Image: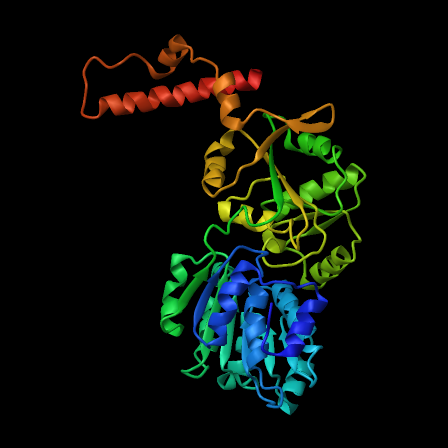
Length: 431
């Protein structure tokens, strides 16, 4: 690890940095050359410092004007980036003015301060940056020589890309643009072509599910009530800090209610909570005020919480990419982690996709309150798959037609396969 500014080195050493992560080793030299770049890397890989380090290296501490704009799609992510930047700035021999602009703050006070002086670095959510730069015309984004759009795919999904677009349009033509994201969806390509002239796409090959020290374990519910399986699972281990993920705020609230009924002092966090409440809960989590946290994907992306020992997917996320983000909350900073996911018969295709991404999980089952190894999913299916009852299948689909039309064989075979699957599910549920 080496920075061109000694105070940046001291700042990184103070938080345990010894060597660059693979994505940092790739990105930092490119950004030092002031080239436009798209950084694609999984959560937990060090994307944030990969652009903060060159930002501080080029920062002119004695120039009191806006030099860099960083956009993040949520208040929590913006706060985290701001905290990382402030940590580096505290080691600077001269003060560095960094400001955070998100919703839920004292707008009048912020505007009053902006009228008197300008920050050198600003971190904010898209709507607040747009408000202060274009509507109030107090944030001089036209002065900035660098703009970072962090978690660009989340920005797109949340509908904030138009706000980012308007802010980006105020920067000088020679400004450097950096887009950081876990995924680069096709819908973001027009934005990239508009602002990033000949960008470099930077990613570390094969840096997917296997890039962290995480043990992945899959627990089949066997058609049992998921809450009963979860209760038994939680009794089988003692975590340092466990995050239980649900797909919706309604599911998260139900899981949280069950945990409280079972005697667990658990926190609940989802997008339906007001910002002040989320901030309060996150602070308590950081201070290890809870051992169990029930959450939706609001904290699966980019938010660092130290000491997470276990991730539990009570519900597998709809998108396989979000499995990556969720599991990436643990196994960080050279520590081991564990991700345990509940799954059912209906998840076979989903699990095939995970395996295609390089996941090699251990299949487990609960025996007398203890997690033990189980046969692999496909091995168990081959062993336990009931032979279809031909007579019952024929009863469902009927006899082959005596008069045929084009494509009848394919349609008839599809009916047979559907009927076979239906009978197999019934047989399994009885077993």
